[in-house]
Length: 119
Image 1 (cartoon, rainbow, N blue to C red):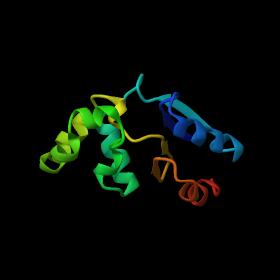
Image 2: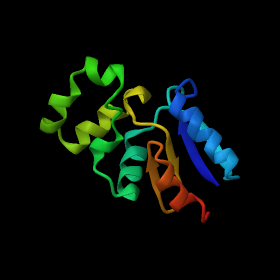
Image 3: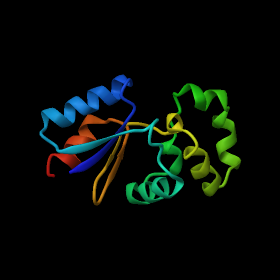
Image 4: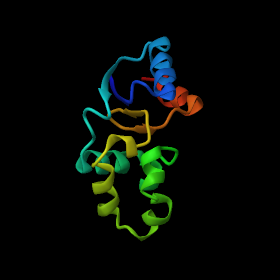
């Protein structure tokens, strides 16, 4: 079973959830706005994913643009970035799928198929 972290009104999250159901992948759902990930969770997920921390930011989000993070992230330490991500779930790229040995950030069907179809 994987953990599916979503913002339910998000159309991409809805599409991803439908995909999980159609592929009979068991998951528990977590509303990212109501249960914002902590800096510790985000750090662990980032390490497990092997992705740069920047990939965890919702770069198309309103809050990201309002805070002008495109220019600010480069001068922030990783700890500062994690602390910022932990302040509001709307800053975090979604959906996230957390498994025992992997983390998927965003919905890329081919990537999900290769990783999740064997689960």
